[in-house]
Image 1 (cartoon, rainbow, N blue to C red):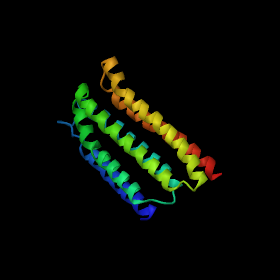
Image 2: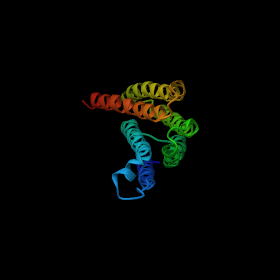
Image 3: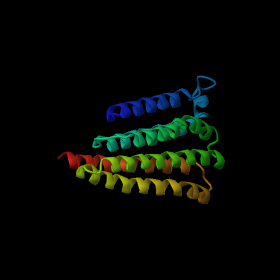
Image 4: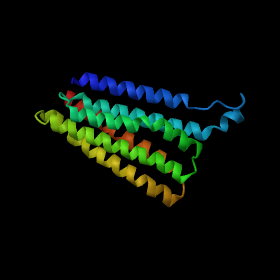
Length: 194
């Protein structure tokens, strides 16, 4: 299987997920500012999920950028990762409608955690099958380090929300954790391209 085909499939699924995420937004009951304000929690959940998915997409492309080979194992890790990504519109709607409910945000947290774990598994599989490329391995080591940071921050999001007794902390922490690797990886790719 060529890398391009797997990347295109991943892009298509992510594009569909973002579309579903936008279509799940409710319309205000009336065309007034007050009615629109009533939907603020849903819009907050949408915005966090949108930027979380956007950061994931950037991270995935950075991960794929230098990879030369993919295998069936990499493809299966990708499919499993996309399964969890496909749940994001559902858990976003659930969390957005119950923003102050720890269980609803806990479900969002669980999907985030499983998505991150599968992105990491895909990255390690890519690293294994591209281990003969020193530039890729150097890039992969840095990415894997930051993915562990991302995972650690994700794991900490639930206890932090419980400690603060403020469930929305989960969504904010998850989004911030996803953005950090994208910035680091962008700089890393610039270093290897120069």
